[in-house]
Length: 171
Length: 171
Image (cartoon, rainbow over all chains, first blue to last red):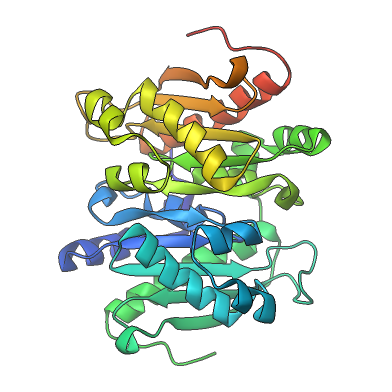
């Protein structure tokens, strides 16, 4: 059977790159709810690279599991740059990985916190800018699956770019 | 776009059943690495039902995140009935859910701990047998994706059966 996640989002290059560098990755996922980690895990031999991850669908778990600051969550909302950054930091710290990826956003069909479906923030924490997470805001189109799948593809590409020294430069 | 996880594994009936019962679910996933939680999250409105989950690819995280007993892990190995049971209990407890699903096994292509690819244990914890987790051993065929995808389908069907009062009766 063809792995539909491998076919669409091509995580193999990222996994090989991390493997060569001797580095690891972990995730903290809200709207994708494990889809990013599951996509990486489609690559045979990923166990040297993927530590694990946190699926933090409920707000309480963003705080309890991924160590998002409850005051930041209350002030900025779950769908925010600040929470994506803290999810990334929390993923790396809690799972003991070189790199953490945090994703939060609105998959749809309903809006959330005033944000339309497709509003997504991807954060990456690691050896970036002296430890400051990089965060990218996405405005994706399409249905629930399109938003979640494109979020995964963007997160994979974003970490790859950072590892290759191509700092992402804004929308 | 069609959600390939919804199309194959049909989590909608389980999500609706949990919704009607006012109950929640959480996951602790090794070989599937988030695929089960991500499949459930494909159903619109799942946030009332899915608390979150733990992706515990590394052995350390099975202990640190999902509260698997290190002595049990050492004695039985990661691919075991005992660890699947503890993953299920840990998922429910750590994520504060009515039901916990734990999955561990060998996706392949290589064997692990002497178990061939396709050896999988699915545990479910909740109001089953006075709190004792139900565990099912699977011997799946096919490639890495087939094993992971069929594990997700089995876990979904197993919780559905339990909720419907059809206790699973052995291989």
